[in-house]
Amino acid sequence: MSAERTYRSSGGLMKSLKGIKKNSGLTYALKYAAGVLKQGIGISKREVYRKFGGRSPLIHSYSTFNRYMGIVKQFVNWARERGVNRLDKVIPEVVREFLLSKAGYCSQKTLKVNASALRKFFEVVGRPDISEEIGRSYQEIYSEGRQSGRALAFAHPERVISNLKEEVHRVIAELQLLTGARVGDVKKMELLPLEKKVVIKKSKGGRTREIDYSDRPEEFERIREFHGRLKELLREKDWNSVRKSYYSDLKRAVVKAGEVYTGSHAFRVNYVKNRLQELKSQGYSEDEALQKIEYEIGHSRIEMSAYYAGG
Image (cartoon, rainbow, N blue to C red; front, top):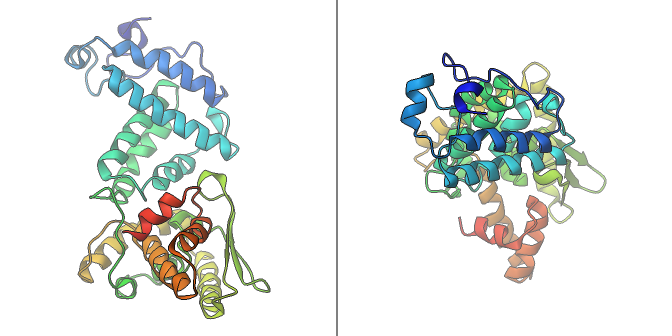
């Protein structure tokens, strides 16, 4: 199947989707996409541009092919862990969550590559709507990437929070700072008042986070207050719109506070650093403290807790 037979010259989209159906499984879709996209290897981009116009629908080098397919495989595994197994079950929110979940440790350049890989994939398997949505959400996703490739703690997080314009954004930021939650996890929080625990179900990697505040009851009461207020505010607001506007408001607030913007994960880093000092003051060794924090922030490797602690 040649590139010329596979794609229309006007828009570079699939003419025929033989072998792929709307309800095909994601694992099969991955194999199918690999078979189509690799046909560009050995063909110059210039030739494709000349024949079809616009952006090339294919991949033209082995290194890019391997990198893009690796990213798509990560997405497929990530989606399946969340019960999304078929192409027709993929919604834009799932893709956005996947890309934003990488924001804590990826540079803006790496996020751009991830977005490009997924756009190629969804175009070739007959879901151009998802590809277009990635394009529309690109700025939101890109802005969450790290300019340095690493999230840095705020020197004065409270000052940043006070500079946020919208109350709902201030509440989200407070909850991030108090729990180390990712933005997408803030809405998933459940509180267990008697046990003084915060539970976040289906966080990154499908994990359930459980944070014990029995040793810091005052912080738990603050979380209860902000959690309740967030529920009230979201009765009149759409969560997706709130989250999208949160990033631009945060960026503006960071600049106004004289801080360096490395994304909302900065509050997560602040949590780790504060918690590390707190546990060490209680007699924990650094390794013991980091292991405890690893569980609290939902990572499976102590190295990630140490990584954040150094931010």
